[in-house]
Length: 433
Image (cartoon, rainbow, N blue to C red; front, side):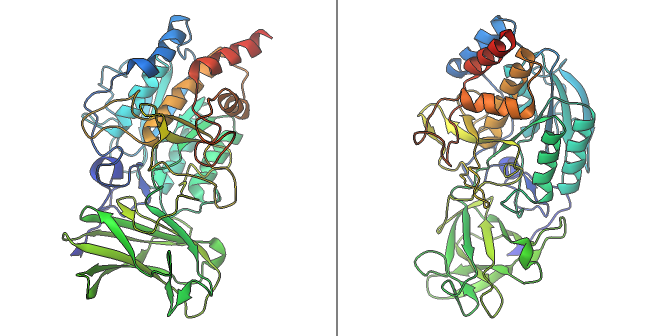
């Protein structure tokens, strides 16, 4: 086995994110999971599209509204589905913004265009925390009405205090509606504490005292370990072992990530087929530090859905969207859940991720696919009522949502599934009133 690192961002959702050293990855954590395939076609299934058809027929099409999209894969601006709607493209970091061919960014733009066909699109390609912040700042300076950011940054704080989440909050405070995915880590996340009752021989216990967290997935592995800013000077490490059931051999040890200002480490590796597990080690004495272990490529044997939302979905003023399978009327099992680490609900609303945007065999699926559905809906709201602030837009989407989880507000589905027609009609009535 060898560590494989590259300078450019690799996209988990499309190319398994395994060789990346960057913190950014499009949502979609494991094999046979969301967003692994490129865009081949995007069609509107009648059930979900019907709501938008009704609104479009009534003249609500997103006219005079601008939507910015932040994505690491680039955009095929020659695609017939978005041609004529693109106002400007910019690349922040490596690679051109307009990328001919199949791309996650193109799929996102297509969904926005089909929900709000007359909205102007501002497309930004990014490849790191810094370039993401630059892109968001550019969109805000361009006075874009809605920002759609179908990306997830691993190793960031879960309480909205990190640089990625702060950018989203600042954009909202400057008058832009910011829409982010909850993430797809419900089965690939574990959180715990370096405490007296969980640490033995400097090794953390997961569930039922086990100090080994087996992983299930392909041979390309990415793992992130992050902990609280207050414990920056302490050293925590995640180790990857290969086992034959009797003996275990250390394969890789996490290294600090220097691309942001938060305490985290990561493993990015290619491995041979076999059985592998993770172990977390730390200081000689328990410190009480809280940390999170996530893998955008593998399910964890010991996983906790709680607190599994990732940045920028952790931002305090963003609209955070979970992935809802409207075909079977249930939350996707991988869709990240709240609360956030600082005990906010986390998920604000959920939206269809399969029925509306059906792409190539591997599919454009997950919270990344749900985000542009909500982004297009928000654009229609702002056309229907130009006086709406970002907070008012969020509250309107929440109040008109259909309860699909536990009764009332919950950490898994938030206020429920977005209802575009009801939301737009409510916005119009507010104008009429």
